Picture 1: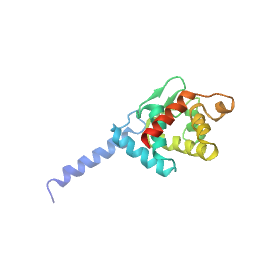
Picture 2: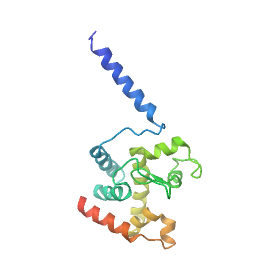
Picture 3: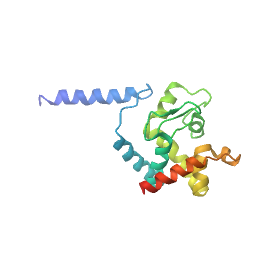
Picture 4: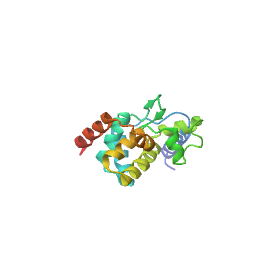
Length: 164
């Protein structure tokens, strides 16, 4: 038996256990901005969203920070997902009382992007560009109640053009 095989296997097992143990513990494994951008490209393709558009939305929502939090909503992570939106996509049981584990998962980049991409993809299929982007920001109900954020739309357009 190779003398190095056991230590290498042990390191691999400890790494895996550490990663699994971090899920739901409030710890998001550190990721570089390059890793985040690669993940965004992957998710954009999976959800049939133009990658520069998804990057633009993530830039405006969180500036590519997976630990971003808006206490006003509250919303979390790269795409600033609210517990209410997560409940709509069956990821949170009770948006009024999300568990710590559910909040922790809202910070997890892949999970956060899946919820945000599913929602954004549906909006883009249902509405024109401006309405879809505005609805992502203020919610569909908010949009139909007349809420608009022209600064948000302008920022998304600016970054979309710069990433294209």
